[in-house]
Length: 79
Image (cartoon, rainbow, N blue to C red; front, side, top):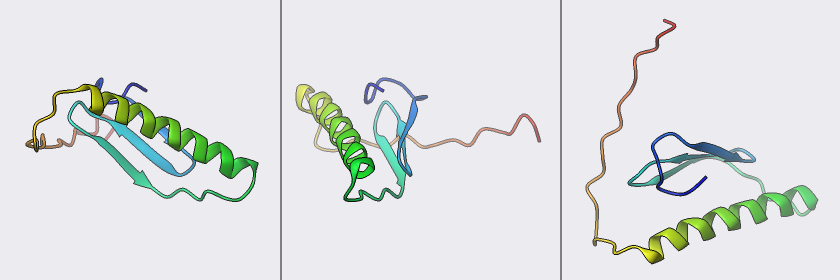
């Protein structure tokens, strides 16, 4: 997932859900980084994602603060 590229990408790392937006990255859930190979894999994935976010932010001409776009709730087409 390329950070801030669109309003549709969602990925997960363990129990964390990461949602892409053009003005922010939203992260929810929980992640246990255990002292084993699975924990190492989760930590490496989280580190790589944060590095990608930092690269985009550091390369941009950023304002001091943005006005957050409101989220909208879509009507459930199956209801």
